[in-house]
Length: 354
Image (tube, rainbow, N blue to C red; front, side):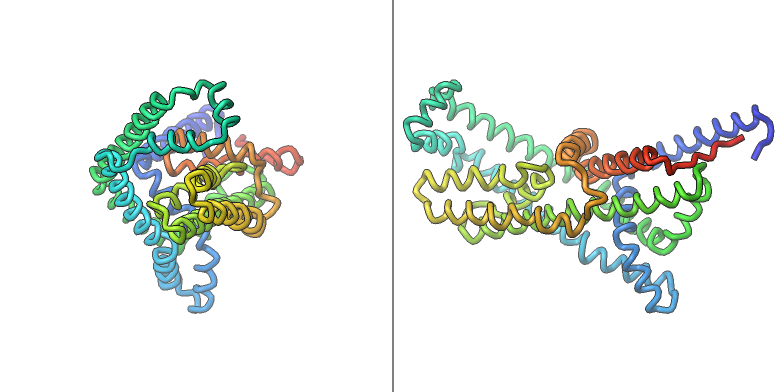
């Protein structure tokens, strides 16, 4: 390290400059790098167990872990995404052809409501059913056209997706194999006290695993259960609605109920009483309880965030970073809370350069 004050400042400026430049270079593949880091942290315990059983063969254990990760976590997501795109395309075609008229269905549902509920809707200005039908139909068409353009955009960047996918797999292999050495090197260079660095590293790994397991696993289970009950009840597009439930289940308080509750209400009002009752009971007793049962087991008390913080960070991450924000937002919020809790406890020791 340079000894004089000027050389020290110049070196720190150079260090900051090359770091920013390096991050800027990685920016086109930030999603691939991020998911490689997340999957490496989640599957690192499995890789270490395989390495011990294989006698310390790092390359073989990392390759086996990568194959397991590919089969368990990556390929199912790709297959489900492809099926959802196909189902969404069929839904758009039905809306575009007029075979499915959501506005008409909504107005029929409003007409089935009891008089006092219709009066309540009139107070909110929902009295012109024909105008309501036209507005809902236009909104449904606009939404479907927006989704169709997104699907087209996904098709246009297929090559970029393939490149990013293989970059993620390539980086994931080396992170699994050399992750412990890289973590030690990073911990050595961070200008903090040894105890603080160790605590932050433990917090980071716990938060990543808890966020992925607690949020994504619970969301996947709720989405799968929601799609299953819709398929059993012979309702249209169960896979599409199941995936939508999985995404919405990341939002606290309301979650998957945004999807299944209106469906159950429509079934009850349109004469499908047994289907509506079944969907309501299943949504409350099964889908709703999954979060209360699984999340404490997978997340734990020390890393769980307040519901309002999860909601704000999830929506903010989604607005800034797209689908990656569903994970990055709560992850950043959890690390923010953990870092400030550590600072407030008085257990941090910052080691500044001379």
